[in-house]
Length: 319
Image (cartoon, helix red, strand yellow):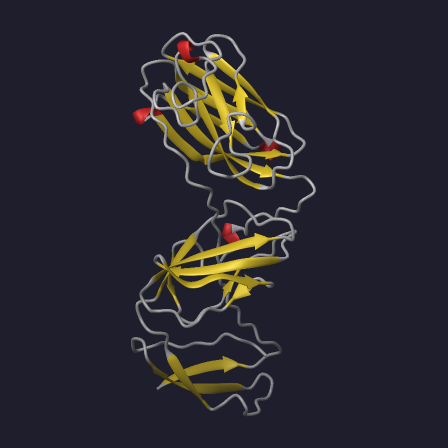
């Protein structure tokens, strides 16, 4: 038998915080082949909207292909942008092509999605104007370089998006926003509970997150490893109570805010682990139906079952 000792005052305060996160996917693309024997890419720079910048300095990537699609810059439907690529390892003048998959079909058009370079030896400059009618979302951006003998080529060899003998190829990501559409942000990671990598979370829990401006709802998913427990459940509020979880298990949480126009993009994925013990079940005596006067001390007896004993119980609530 365990005992609670408390004093009744004017109000009761019991607070539980719980929450989560999100994730986007873009298509599968051909993997080109490079040889790193000519003018490889030493720096890739582009400034986008809202202070977003990619400024990536590298050597030639293994196999001549560098997947930097985790680096992202924001562009919008009314913008014009400049991409600068610096190259080394050989004489180079305008021997590069830039592609952006504006329509998300996992291919790069050599007519509507191709940008050719201007610039002096050792530097390529591309002017980017987004294609009219592009919808909001993540877009793959690919830079291809090769020797001067193949300037302007767009086929399987040379400067094509799936080149087999390029010097080097690098991939990046554009977050494109069609102005006039309301694209919500992701939830704030620091306001999610459990926080990322939290441990000893109860099996019976409610997940909560912050409200996001422009969001009309949220898609919630919960995974036990790769197995979905809840998949894309639409929530209008900022909380979700899943079924009773397993003890001693790691879970992954996904929350994607969406508006009438678009979902949020590239949100964080959080994880948490439940307690290795079952949640305790405590039978309280006397019941709370008993009348208790203000400022009158009283004792509550608790008989816990499940989980691991003994327990130390306390209540600091007020009334």
